[in-house]
Length: 169
Length: 169
Length: 169
Figure 1: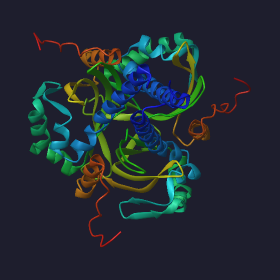
Figure 2 (figure 1 turned 135 degrees about the vertical axis):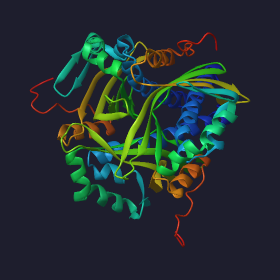
Figure 3 (figure 1 turned 90 degrees about the vertical axis):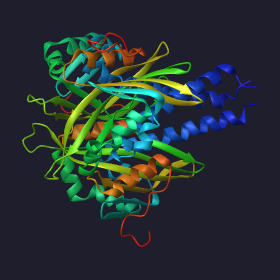
Figure 4 (figure 1 turned 60 degrees about the vertical axis):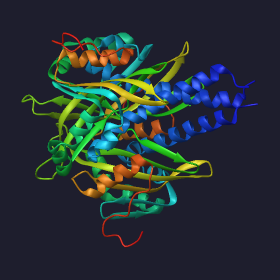
């Protein structure tokens, strides 16, 4: 018979590990231009909120990755580089935070330039035994207070605060 | 009754995971300009040794993050991007190593430039069940032999060697 | 007596963790110019296939890191920055995928430029209880379809597809 506390500890490790892996899959998915791989990281009705762009549902993410503008980035050479995530699990819900870079290949092909450096807050749920993103909220690190609030909330394991100007979500 | 070997294995995973998480929290802490979050990663009497700058204690780290020069970086847009850490745990002590980048937003706002690329060696201890940094030693990767020694020692799970010119630590 | 399922779960976490750690050791090894540390990440007869350059065996990797061209990069200041790996273990074999950057210090010393951004596919085996790389296949993210195929195969836990133009491997 197994110590129930042991099972809880093992489960917590597995959960945090699964979420870390899910988040680490985002870059390889979108840099391959693979819309299916990217979309399935989200819950069916999940959201991806980047600056003033709201993608709704897996279909919204799928559309973004399939779009000519994204596929052009891939064809030219781009790298969505996400750092190690810090994950906080509470039962069947979780919060994660990481920073990320987007690099674009120079026209001359001599290297890459860093286009964006971003704060990322993830809210996740366990659905049928699988972790999925319910909301990813991303803001560029340009001094805007909301990007900083996302980092603070992420480290505290708290939901993303409402974006400035939002009357309700 | 649980296999004691199993408990040891689980504990080792938890320890390495906790330390990885602690180190991954540094970037989001300082890029939010959150001095409290950054300072609490260190032991009360921990040290942060960057080039010829020695921060002593949590208060030293807190002061650095609160300083006008750091807060100016945050206001302008900066990203402290730490890679995945390699951790070696020995009982209640540990060593970790990773590389890191500091990116600054261009004045024109068209992107970010990489200001620093750094070798980081961490010595940690478990205090009251919590891992804390006792010494973080960081040197820019500019060919200096000491940066390379930090990487070698970190991978070997050994303490950071004394910096060149140091008579004692 | 311990639940055999529990042991399987613990072992899987340990395996994925060990492989993540192995891959995270690559950057600190080569940026220190430490050929021994880098070579031992590979199986004795492992391969490292980068664009049109094939390194064969640990000795091939050792030679690359020891070469004047690599040691010149280290002396000038370089950073091989690998992101968090996504690992799929199947018994004593595994596949991992991550993206990576190579940064070089500017001649003026004012910062670093990103020279390469790369898709990396790793095939690994467990040899005598130790995970080792059998083949690392890396291609720069410049829009070439093969780089994208490496990312897709890596996320699916599948072997790297044959490179274009290869008649056999």
